[in-house]
Each structure stands twice: as structure tokens, then as C-alpha cells.
Image 1 (cartoon, rainbow, N blue to C red):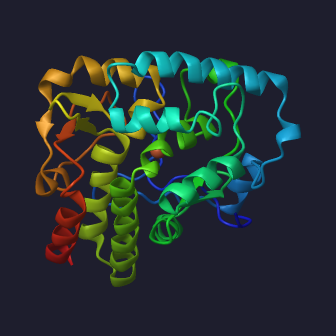
Image 2: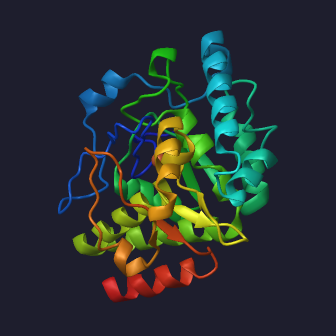
Length: 288
Ligand SMILES: [Fe+2]
């Protein structure tokens, strides 16, 4: 892991820990949808670490982590995509429930499995940096853990969202490859100033990577997106709408606006990861 000099955690970082949806997204449709540019004063105010010092966590952080993990793992049983749950369980010795996990250990397992690495960031980072990291098979995570009084509601992603929500799918090579391509296209669109293309990527991130459903081997829609997986309230809410999902079509997803200031009501369900990478490549060609 390299020391991080930029400011943020996940690219399109939306963290929703209750179904009173509020996202970190400051962007609105038509603007730079997933930019989380923060100024120096904000960063200084955050005072968030860019290294992980395991000895610095108070016991309360470990206790909160364990409670979050155990409640959500149980809540996801039968509802979450097997792809996600199997990877989460496979990582039980690194992304563990007993206490705040070590980023270096999670990274070692991830790297051995799909070649991905992790980078510690203090908070949200600009989309340019986020895309560039994804293109290099690197995902960002914060290392601060919410307080107990923030158990069900956060205004920005913490380590539980960044790791529990986002890392398990990166153990799957198809998803990991898709994320790398997503980053490569983001870099390309950023360099070419393709605002429309970037907006499409933001919508894809929102509707799939954060709030997507994925069908299991039996064809049943299961929860998949990180914004759902890391949130008890969002899990309940999304699961209650599983009969009202829209079929995942990349053209439709990238053309569908989303709101960050109201309860999520639109969810798409992807049949399989198999064709997603090729579909994204073809869409990017048309959107270039
Ligand atoms: Fe996220």
C-alpha cells in the first residue's frame, strides 16, 4: 500500500445507512456526478488517518465493528447474492467479524485471489484519482470506524462500508475485471472531457455497484450493491422492493437519473456478470 496523498475513499461514495437516504454525493444530475472534490480546509477538518495503526483503535471501535458485522451478516442470509456472501465468508480470517480488520491482511488475500490492492484514504477522493486507481486494480478504503451513535446513519463512508460492502465482490474475477474496465473508461472520459459519458458511469456506479441486484444461479434476484450490503436499513428497504425490479440494461441504467435526497425507489437486477464487461466496453465505444 502506498501512502495516500489524496482525499478520499470511494469514488462515487454513497453511503446509506438508513433508508432515509442521504448520500455523500454532492453532485446533481447534469453536473460532475461523482466528483467528491474536497478542499484543504475540509480535509484538515476531517483529521482522518491515511495509515492504519491497529493500536490506535479504542476497544469501542472493535465492539462496534463486531456488532455491525454480526447483525448485517445475519440480516443478509438468504437475501444477498451468493457471490457476495461466499466471498465474505471466504475472507472471514482477514475481513473478520471479531474486530476492526487489518487492511494489509485483506489486501494480501485480495491480491492473491484477483490481483487487486487496497489504498487507504481519509475520505472521499476526486473522481480522477478514483478512476486511475481502479484502472490499476486498486480500491480505496477509509480506516475510521463509525461511533456507536452513528450505528445506523452516516453522512460519509466509513471503513465498514468501504470494506464489508465493497471488497468481497472484488474477490470475483469477473467483477474485478469489470471494475478495472470501469476505471479505464473513467480515465478515458475524464481525459477527453466526456461529461455525458461520465454521467453514464456515475449512474452505473449508483445503480449497480452501490444499489444493484444480481440474480443467483436459480434466477432469483439477490442483493448485491455495496450501499445495500453495508446498511441494515437499506437491506430491508431494497429487499422489500424485490418484486418491483427493473431488468438491467446498460443503456437504460446509464440514462436513468437518480436522487440522493429521497428514498431509493428504482433498482435494477442484472442477470449475470458474464456479459457485463463486454457490454460496458461496447457502451463506452458508443458513448465516446
Ligand atoms: Fe460505496
